[in-house]
Length: 147
Image (cartoon, rainbow, N blue to C red; front, side, top):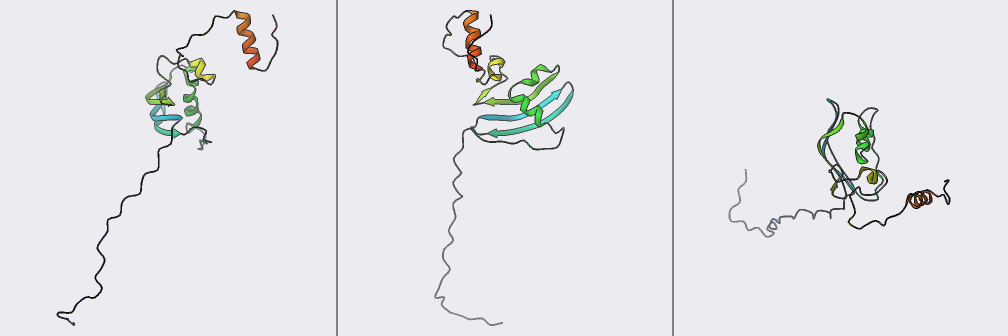
């Protein structure tokens, strides 16, 4: 073993520099947010602690084997499971643009027709049944309605 005494180091090691962690990416807005959702058919639980964020205008695919809950989850987004006796979200929340779509004030028909499901503050003009039917027909691309 060789020991050198009083030897001067000409190239000292550079001081340690602490690296900053990378900046987090800016958070994208969320259109559909599923928070800790459990879903049951009667007493049989089929979804367990589901968490999902879907940004606006995103193409999203749910992929999995038959019977894994893809359709059940999709039906939660438009509350189609409400039509099945005993089917319910037993825990968690489903939000559309930050609003809980299972809140009591949600208009389920409006939600299914592509609205946000929440009542509007503005007033709706009074129209008669014929005018209502005509507007509905025009929305579906028909010009006339049968009396």
